[in-house]
Amino acid sequence: MSEISGPRSAASCPQQAWIKRWWVPIRRQPSAIAGLLIVGAYLLMAVCAPFLATHDPILQDFSVALQPPNGEHWLGTDSFGQDVYSRVLYGARLALWIGFASVSLGLLGGMSIGLIAGLVGGPIEWALMRLVDSILAFPEIILAMAFIAVLGLGVENLIYALGVSFIGPFARIVRSDVLQVKALPFIEAAQLMGVSSWRIILRHLLPNVMSSLLVQAGIRISTAILLASGLSFFGIGVVPPTPDWGLIIAEGRGFITMAPWISGFPGAALAILLIGLTLLGDGLRNALNPNSEGR
Image 1 (cartoon, rainbow, N blue to C red):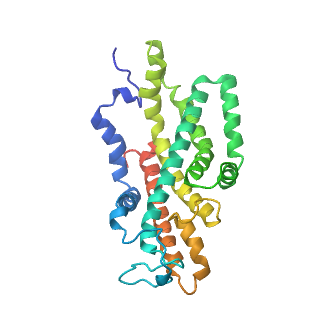
Image 2: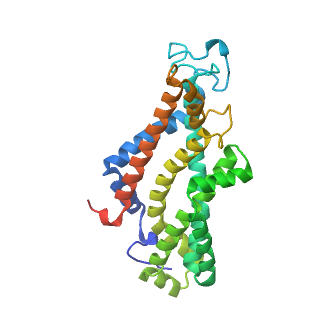
Image 3: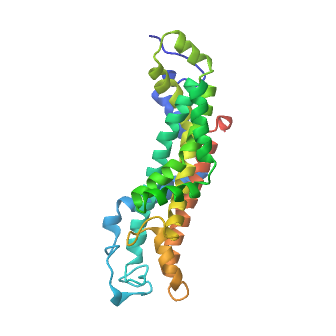
């Protein structure tokens, strides 16, 4: 069967065209490169946390409680004598895991709903989009709190709660893109030639909606990390003694005047990661925006 040609048909793009379409525009965006470097450094920290940590992140030693940064405890200790440096390292691992896992869950759910709604149409589309509207009717943090109230505290339940709250935005984006792409001539040509629906979805529709999904995923990861830290700060997310940034900041707020390092260092780590993810998301949006091609 001959390849289907079209304005953005994935089937007609060789490997070099994919590199030109994705990497070349991204590397021209300074914000995207800066974001990649920051996020890459955090990923390296998260992966190497067991080797970089100097102490057990949950080990309590009240004989060294509230010590300022020193040669033994590089970022000081908290009120339980736990090493702040080691807890910040493991907190990066947990934050990234919650961010990527919850967004992946929301992405899969939203992509499935968006594809079905955009391709099938009719009453099924109406019913699915009303479900999406009901999800979007509540702020993400309120929806996450409601699910946590039902599921209970813990890392896994927090991931499920955040993932469900992200389904709505992904579903709307995919449905909108599918409606636009399926009206293009090369999709109609593929259907007339008898190409199977699965082949059209995998080789033509999905590659053409990936740009929007990547941009949205980059934005939602930072949102997930911020929401997770906020919920843990208020005591309805991760439970002690898990090394979570929000939990560490909450534990240190009572000692902010006499031991500011307890909340200061995890707060700075959270802020830098969010800045990196924001720069990466903005860079991806500018690079993968069709209107910015050729800049």
